[in-house]
Image (cartoon, rainbow, N blue to C red; front, top):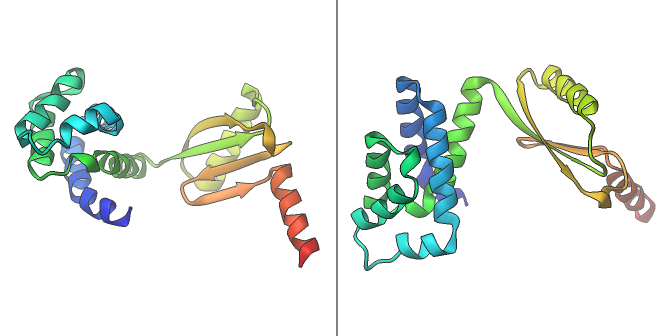
Amino acid sequence: MAELTTVARPYAKAAFQYAQEQGALNEWSAMLAFTSAAVSEPIVASIVENPAKTAQQQADVLVQLCSDAMDSTRRNFIALVAKNKRLSALPAIAELYESYKAELEKTVDVEVTSAFELDPQHSESLSSALQRRLGRGINLSTVVDPSLIGGVIIRAGDMVIDGSVKGKLAKLAEKLNS
């Protein structure tokens, strides 16, 4: 993964800088997300990674699939990525681009996994508390995992807060076994 990130970084930086200069961060974000999802599909991947196809043909496939999110600059970007045989790096490019965008906007994506569905009031109070703690805007998404028994697991970037009953039981078992 580190190698793919190394390959993706210059493309993501260039796309981000250009999008920022043009005031088109969201448009580029949408295009990168869509093309990233497209090349992750086995059928599309088999077409765009086919060595019998020229770089232009590979780029054309993606441009046609994502025509709603494309303008001439974004088409040129995809053509350049295809020319350099880096279409498989599009998911990493999109991920890095989103991290640059979040850094600029001072936001962080937070995933909350809970044993039960959170009601809107709890989601809002959790979001407010995390915003105060992290000093950033919060993009909160929730996932339900009944195996947690109770409590929540909060993931924000590389920070993980495990307040689940399952996690506490695992820590207790670990202490008892040592």
